[in-house]
Image (cartoon, rainbow, N blue to C red; front, side, top):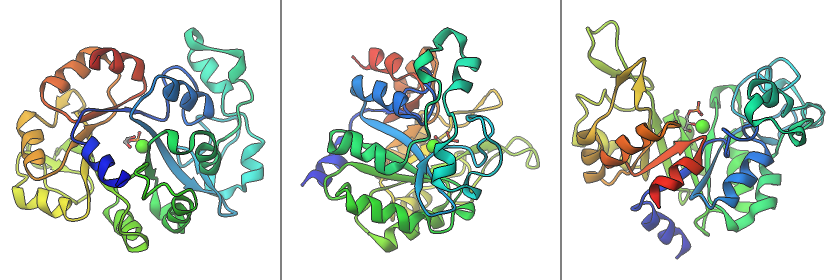
Length: 284
Ligand code: G3P
Ligand code: CA
């Protein structure tokens, strides 16, 4: 089946366009996804949040200030209000070398619009962002995935830092393939010992097969950071052990070619990047 094929494809290296080709065009906008799709990446990565009137929008931050001309919490606004914002001009100001007049006035993208644009011709790596600030997010997301027949046709992965959010998705539809995100950081309290952010797994130095199995019980892979404040938090052994427990490891967010190469040598199963063009060149 297409869903089985998708899981099989996870055995090979995955190029994941983080918020689209967001190094080249405003993140989370259609322009960034158009570029990534044109370059034939394996997955379009996106974060979803919910508007005050219950619509799903593709947006990363909890506040609209950084990447639009508005201010305040995204879920205080209706879709119509958010559609009036300019989510492109900030990019031109921040990235004069990649600025393009066409980005000015770019509107916020809904998940429905993204699905309408690329349909089953793309795969989507969707994060339930800030679930505690977005009540009803999982219900709305699963309904939208079903409406577009994305699940059975092997088109989506749903990722979250919040285990609870992933389990909620499974309660709604147990066929959705899930990715548990973790953020490892060296604990200051515990004398340099590595501990973990979300409480789902112990730090990489202490993680056991049982811990990996507990994640593999509900998810098909693990998404992790690589470096925290200059310190590498995962290594080849971590990847090998995760793989041995049936979990591919995807690392976020890797933009420099030398880091991409290092992680590929370590055996990583995929990378999230704002520069899929750089990664695709290495893969080829
Ligand atoms: O989803 C993987 C990676 O994107 C997680 O970090 O903050 O970019 O959503 P963030
Ligand atoms: Ca994300």
